[in-house]
Image (cartoon, rainbow, N blue to C red; front, side):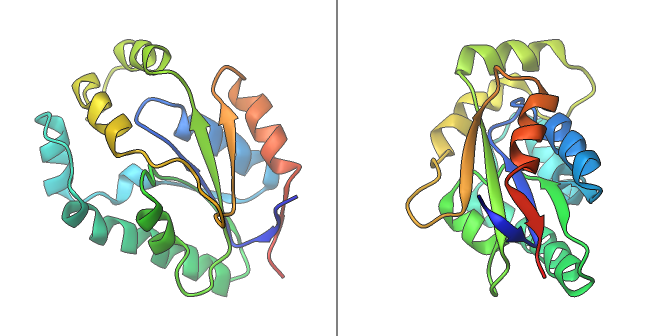
Length: 171
């Protein structure tokens, strides 16, 4: 049991279902949902749209903006669900800095499954050609991190139900 949290961050590589699961989880918990992609600056969107992977320096401001929203939610005692790739441990540490209690839900799936999903979606700035760079950057949840791994073979509703049973809003 994860217990009380300030936020749940649904994480993983592009195309794993972060938005679908995040929206379903927020609905089940009665919490606000924030789409992490919406906080990328135009420069990041342009890079990814052009097939250029983001580097750490491209992500810091984006991660800090998301962390600020988590901190505001904590202050308001209104926990949130956020979709954010959070691929590296240092990114997750940045999102939970300052004593924020964040549960990371890593949506895990094979490259083949996720690539097939990306090939079917339209209107998203992230091209399937960047998927390999996402997998290369991904650092699985490690010792000491508050998180769970969920296989994407389950439906978003099934994943959300599993996660919702583990969390409660922070006091």
